[in-house]
Length: 371
Image (tube, rainbow, N blue to C red; front, side):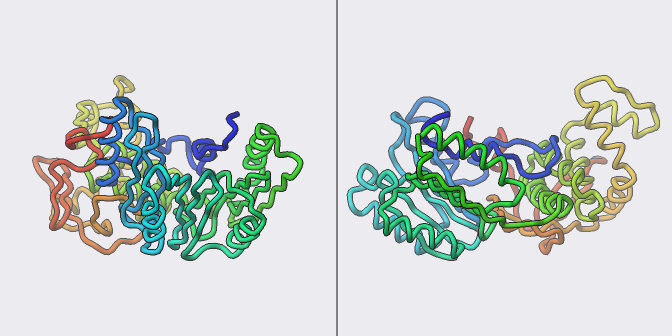
């Protein structure tokens, strides 16, 4: 294992109790316009696959990114950050720019709490709404002049974090089910850095919720992700996310409805001929690459059929806020803003009220797309 516990190591910890069908999206660069443009510039500069050190905030389009590779831009880019965090970054950059700022980590939580680490972990500052135990640990470390090796905040949660100190002390507040896998991972980090002498593993549970409760929370997340992609015209991702939500919490009426809409939209794009014939009364077939999708569609046909009838009569389906950039705050089951689904040539199409996406972000037709 490498000397530093990198962010990728932590993100290999799975979303707790989610189905294997949940899509694994490597990045969301293409879902945030400013980040996508920065990624394109990095790709052109390095002449290789985009490689940004990126952290996200809770609001739509909120991020901090570092083009850090030897052939990269050697530049930071951010958008929609809390004002006090932006002031801190400006102060760091005002004293010599990228080379002297040496920003190592910028992380945010759901309540606009933030931590900035620079100068190889020797300098760090924090602000906003952070858990008291994290602030206390940072204060003690600063007084003792202990550097920070890495820090992570969960931008979807108000209190979850992981703090790795340069002397081997570890502070974490995560779901109880992460305790054992995280402790195993931390032991590897401690051994690799020869920090066993001062190592302490300080773990606080952020949630004692049951597996069923966690499954419902994950379903809300996948539901929000699916609707986001459905609104942007990414029918395959919408189908995958909403299938995962349905597997976790299929009894929820919003999940069932949204999954049915995703199946309708995916078939509108896919135009699977076997499914079209099956819907006219012919027997199903396991042939072809779309066999699994056909089974999913047919298993939901009792929900799809009346929904299709409603849509054909011009009724409106409510999806929530229309936006072009992903936000972790859009996890509500019920929705507020109207989005109309139209029936055209016998197929369902999606039409956002007041907005049209001829070339939505994250689709192959978008200009300057990240490979």
